[in-house]
Length: 490
Image: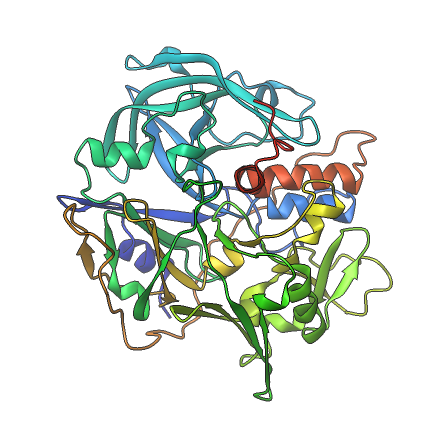
């Protein structure tokens, strides 16, 4: 069995060549329990326990900001475009009554390279009234051993979450009134990479480490040919990683299968690839078929569909395939779509399972029922999808490269992407999955904070927290897609 240290060695961060940069992403925040609810430190509503555990999920990178450098932990988010760090004076971080436990904070007074660009220029307002706001600043920013000089980022003094965010989207989706070169732009502008492209490899559910590669493709990290799918415009511009999505096919253990095409949906259902969202969401017409075939049960308290935790260890041939026209197909075993975030806690008594787990696919109708959007005419593919895929985000040519991930790969074979290329290369990965060993994961503790006397949050408030956790991303993409201003007040 491969050890965690061997995996880390294979994913070691740093510059691999003159114009390729790789760094490690880690699953879950330090000191959090992202997969099991058994170690929760306090009694709370079931929905609150769910939120606490999901909020420890996601994928994070360690960066350094300022001179001398201050260490920061940022959520990797392909669904937003600004990089932002938490202020050492952020309200949620210094408020003794807050249930938010801040991870890393930034003190600009200790950095000789810090400059204020736009005071109070960064502002995000959530549907429930929560606000994240602060200044736009510039400072030196180091990631994967590479330093970007004078990168513009947000310095957040009123926090909506407990870490900063590394937004990897198009600069057109920045929250700034005047758009600026973000991190990906500056990597090219400062000649750190040649192509405005990055590759994302999250690895499987049981592994704590993945990687991001800027300016290149790692052909040891995927299987077969890299399918190239054009991005779609939203309101006439490229603003999110949105692509055509044609169908899903559910294959049962006995070999029978059922396909559901997006043609069966009475509205467009383009797919947005979003690493900042834990779950994946399908239109109701498609999601309801999935729920039926996996015998999912709806929990009215959590407002989510749950499944039997037995899927974690059984049904190895039970798979869901996602088809993107004739270009790419990503196959996900059912065990990768089951999240053990409830532990042994009982949920609604009508739920028939001895142990209930959260299904990693939900219906986009949840956004309508909670009043977040008027029409849920989209597909959102978060981490429960992305872990099974190798994804190349090509911002220069408005393309997405998709292939089946070679999970737990311990080798690398880097193809550097050049500035003169007019499209993604027709790259070919390994012939088949290279390892079947069970990954070794690090022990992590519970995220649940100490209880405040008399605090018994309702699910509605917990769902508001969830929209903040899952989606600075979710909110950014929906705002961009429907242009309604429902979720942001600028």
